[in-house]
Length: 371
Ligand SMILES: [Zn+2]
Image 1 (cartoon, rainbow, N blue to C red):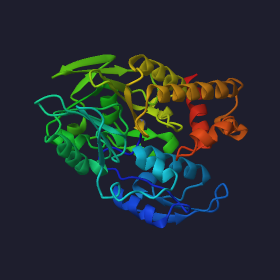
Image 2 (image 1 turned 90 degrees about the vertical axis):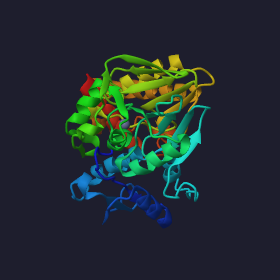
Image 3 (image 1 turned 90 degrees about the horizontal axis):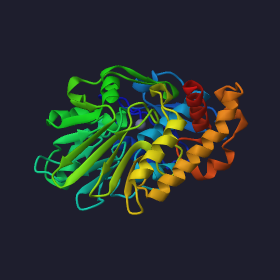
Image 4 (image 1 turned 180 degrees about the horizontal axis):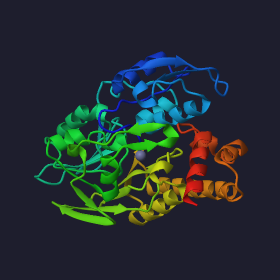
């Protein structure tokens, strides 16, 4: 998800139904500089929109931009924190202790949440743990502390699932500890150049050399490291055109990156050639690796089972089948949104920051561009 590479700060949205305390905890957690702009009633809800001028260009947001910025906030949040914020439940003291949450998934795999996209740490070699994704730039120091606390060492290698800043923002910090960064070749291309995510109006400047993948590949890459075999598989454009899912064979853990948002509508970055048909195909590819005991780490949301992945895949396929006919008839994405084709899915999938209308727009634009 796009959070801005390098030291780009984070944009957040505060709705009035959020408890004040929760909002301030969130602001403190992400350590961002903020200005608050009051918006007129939006969809029956008067919202105080808090935004970062660096990301949003310091301008007042119109209704469409507000919806878009609401979406980005969802993209920037990770794991349980995301769902808790979405439902405005109070955060526990553990989760607000200015730190990240580390969970041991298996004997050798740790999960770190709260740093943007979900992070995995594989502790199988004397050469230092292997980390999957590096989280937000704003939480890079805490991320390194969490990895060191879990394994006693700094990572020897970092694998990126895709280019978005909430998965690569800590690359500079890890590159600075001499970790070797591995990713799909297109991830290096996008990190090397300025990027624009149109739906979110988010610009990400090119990353410094230290943050770039030193090792790249095109289709698949298999690494045998210590007792473990780690398989990286690139898929055709789905969430972006840089996506890789990573299967840790002996641990039976699959890191899906943003090819899976567990339990919620996903963000699909059509500016990076993402589209929903690719998301369905990617889910089908991942399902071939998974069995009934596989632990699947999504880019955002709680750890998933194969059944969860199948459920998400089936939802995406259904959404594609509903929206494609509109585009084929020449309807604009705005006209698709107005028709509310996903209305009945809203309760189950649209409760997060990626609201149903924004998701509908995102999917329609992606299908239109894909052709
Ligand atoms: Zn992403």
